[in-house]
Amino acid sequence: MKTHLFTTEDADIRRAAEIIKNGGLVAFPTETVYGLGADAFSPYSAKKAYSAKGRPSDNPLIVHISKTEDLYRAAETVPDEALKLAEAFWPGPLTIVLKKRPEMPKETTGGLDTVALRMPDSEATLKLIEYSGTLISGPSANISGRPSPTCWQHVQADLDGKIDGIICGLPCKGGIESTVLDLTDPEAPMILRPGLITPEMAAAVLKTEVSYDPALFDKPSEDPNFRPKAPGQKYKHYSPKAEMVIYEGVSEDVFRAIDARLAEEKEKGRKAAVIDVPDPKSFFAKLRAFDELGADVILAAAPDSGVPADSSVAGPDGKTIDPSIYFSLMNRMLKAAGYNIIKVPGADAQKVLSGKNRTGRQTMKIAMACDHAGFDLKQAVAEHLAGRGIEVEDLGTYTPERVDYPIYGKKCAEYVAEGHADLGIVCCGTGIGIGMAANKVKGIRCAELVTPFMAEMAKKHNHANMISLGGRVLSNEEAIKLVDIWLDSEEEHGNHDRRVALLNEM
Image (cartoon, rainbow, N blue to C red; front, top):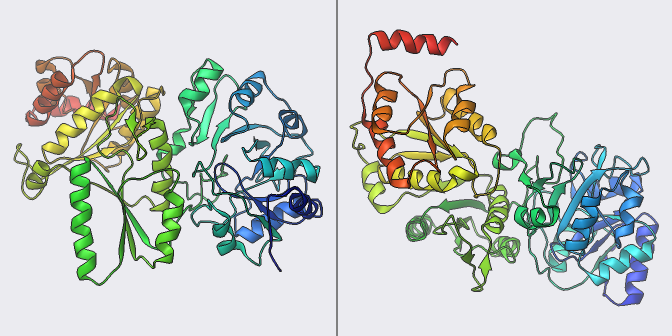
């Protein structure tokens, strides 16, 4: 098959639209990444798109529209909330998930009874949709699993000879895929895939809380029966040919660790590439450039290394970047690296890790989790534990966004109960709710700490394997003092063993 290269001139777009009408495939530019266009109402065209990409057929496609009225062609019902979001963010990098109309084939929706819809910010692509007379499904125009394409040359490198045409527009200005927002329950809007439209931005329009799907804080499911609600929730994504490692920690320590790894790779005769300042606009392009250079390993600093948790920060161009954007970028980086991440402790902790911590025990592992009200406290305690040479497994949240504490209390408790960590610490506003959630898990003894005496007794008498702390009850300094007392106290046995055994049986 010959792949035709089209300009963004009107005559060429009309030629490309005829290909879509006739069941063909044409890649198109957007403000996020290049999409692979097909007739959204044609099961045959959807199957062709899956085949060209090598994409699993249960991974839903996003349907692109050219005007807000097109929502009614694809969705069974269009709530007022969807219209408000469309007015605020379209054309732009927001995808809205709604219940689908019967005419929308399940080949397009990945077998789901919902449809994902967006209006791209590209004049050429809006014309393509209009001229084709249909709606256009459009996954990213790359081989499935490869870094997403942000210029037409990336599309050509992956799909030349496999699709009918490519509209050669400008490089994509956004750099990462659209935010996918589930509105099937308008009263509980949920982000299924993070992007450049943040929860805060959507919440400001909807006048209600917008949460993240809890699945975003875990590795993609490997369960063959799991059906993803949005692209990127199940399968390997964005992977360069080279091995990729993410280093997370304070910037100076991260760069020190990367420099040491560079020296090691050089001694081995391997070619290493570095991403020292991650940027959504250039991330995928850098991965592809490193592949072309033949890199053996890519060493990347986490986007939030050295970033204050409670404020927006200056990005590579000197402009302010919302921490939620860093979360969106980290989502892509983790997938690209196959969740290969190294948490870099500070210089003092490096010395302690080679020996014992100040309790005299070998280095332990503590799992931590929090809700929005406990976020700052969790960050402070985690940094303190790293300074003691204790390994910390942070199970979320990773941004101070409003979330439900039972999810994170249960997640941390299960992690400890299953033996993945020695102890657990959870934080919320009062320490009460998230501790209650933890104690629902069998084998967990979570004690709320408020005073030094409670911290000592939690360990001595109750053998607490988890503690809960309140971000609105304790200062960071007070909480750290209580954590140290709990860790440094010794368990007393005798009658206490019997009582703890009774607790464990409940």
